[in-house]
Image (cartoon, rainbow, N blue to C red; front, side):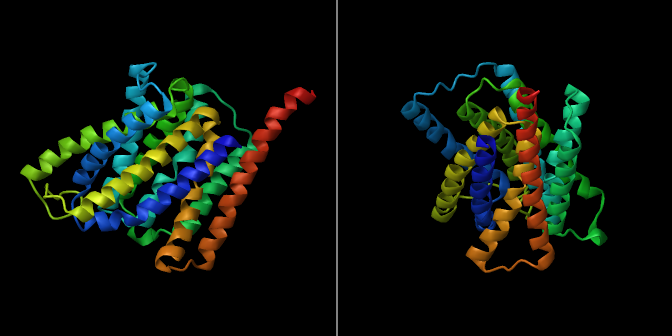
Length: 296
């Protein structure tokens, strides 16, 4: 239940701050945004560490680096997909992560999910498709990009509880921010020398006050959310937490209504119901599995 709560809180925050990425795109490119977000985030991490008396030295630098690279790859592929695909297709692909978590848990670690959890995973993904409603007529090989994002993101989150359960959530979050910042700095150098006109290929521009405030806002929100989701995967079963991450889509729909008065159709509402049902099934099956040995 604690892991589910962390995942729900992280999804609510991330879905809120993502509403303002379009505003950032009016000021600068994607890579410049990530570089400045990292520059804002690192001092905040240091301040939090000092106040909370948390050490930022990793327990195992090698496993932390691998986990950070995998998670960052998933997130950056997702952002790259947004430059060439509709948001619905990119989002549907990224939220294939729970399926990848389930499959990788079996293939790599020999874990057993049980019939109920399998149903919950596929139901959650089906609900995500109902909510996002991607257009099959526009599908192409580029649609594999967000699926790859889901694969990397799911693998990284699964490895969080297996390899990095001794790392603090603050260290896990900082690792992802630094990795994305380093990769983005490299890409910003490339796009500055070979500029384009899209959000992905835009060169460095002098930051405006609006860009700085929006980026700082994004950095603070992302720090909180990434720390929460890292804690969720540290204390909860990856397949369970992954299903609760579908709530991102639910919160995104709610924020669209509250912030921009964008209404949701009946199919999307049905998708929300399916997602909630899948989360309840996953939570109930996990609770039942824990109680079974004590009653035997």
